[in-house]
Image (cartoon, rainbow, N blue to C red):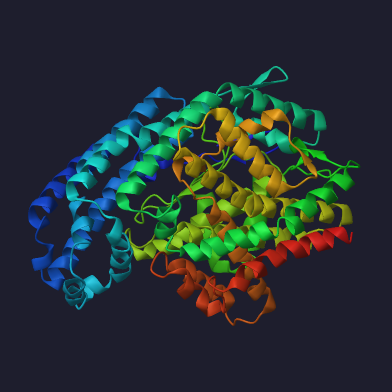
Length: 592
């Protein structure tokens, strides 16, 4: 627990529910155990799946799930320990060592899904007659989706073993570089999280100074970030070619269990509303500031008449849990466990991973949340967002390790819904007109960041990956593509200075999860539609149906999950319905 005068007592997570330390005997025992299990599994089943009875095949899946549970537990601990301080060389070595050890062990289990995909449809159908196999039918469905893109066993094993010295190593280089960077400001050396936080400071001089120091330091390191970006884009191009994916986004869409045309419809709908959304809002904000154009560092600035209050951790916790409880006491009860048991790491620390995330770990333990809490209203919204993820992960845990994970598009549903519940609760309790306007503006900005900005990120990635196929892109060229997309998406009411061309460098999703970013826009628009159904009262027992949707984990696709609410993401009008919520907020602000 870290006590900060104006923020209260900030929790630091206790990872002992995974392992007590990197040298814990239990960790080494688990590695030895799963190593033996994997070797025995390979000897028992490699090349024999087609001949197994249904029940025996079901037992093999159960064993595969158990081994995954042990390996993911080890890797979850290593990842979370590393996220706590990415500049600590011992943690970095431990994380890399665990990656290499687990990769070696899982080489003996790699054959299993490859061989499942070689089974004829009628052979698999016969095995599904067994209740033991039928339980895992959704997982088998998702495994089989990748059949057309599967390579030979030898190539798959080579790619698997080589990953620790390829994409994973480049990702680690990015993480450690970002964690070590310091941004000089007012005699202090800030982390990226602290500098980015100042971009929404009340003092315009501090916003400008923070933006300029970010641009300067990121620019000085742009050549390295360009090398990482180019290398990973080329690596993806090579693998995509071998796997016969039609375009750079295809793997992400397939793994998200969402059709290309649904993603295209989302992107098209958002792009078609740039003028009504971001262009209109930032023109309105510039008017509030008494200027024709806002400098880019004022994009998320507090309104001139807004005295943004500072939230203590305790008040933030109560605001979020109160909103959750008003919707569903059961949902709030799950959320409270994160606060009661130190499953959250909240303070800003040098070396700590910037931003925020929810890590599901394994279904036999519990998730952990990381935030960088600095007391702003947006920090309360971030807490509500990540707690939504955590609640979702706890509820889906009943599906077991192979079926608890949801595709990225639906993984954002609970987080954005939790954020919306918290915002609406806080807005309803606010009686001061000035504060209400500021809260509404802040929510619009968050939604623009989630919808418009993330779709623009997706466009930027698409341009980079497409152009990389014609040769390596200099850092300057990547910056040009970034500036083009930012100008188009955010509109003429924003003025972008030269140093802004380096701001693409700090976005981790481009490195860790190519084309992930549209999932935020997908989730936000989906939740807007879902929330409008909730507020309309047209669906009886909505909270119970909503929690059932979260409990389903990865068992159902988006069409099945949304059907009880009368929604269909394949309907062209679906996305417009979600965007109407943001448009309504902007209409309300224009009328104030």
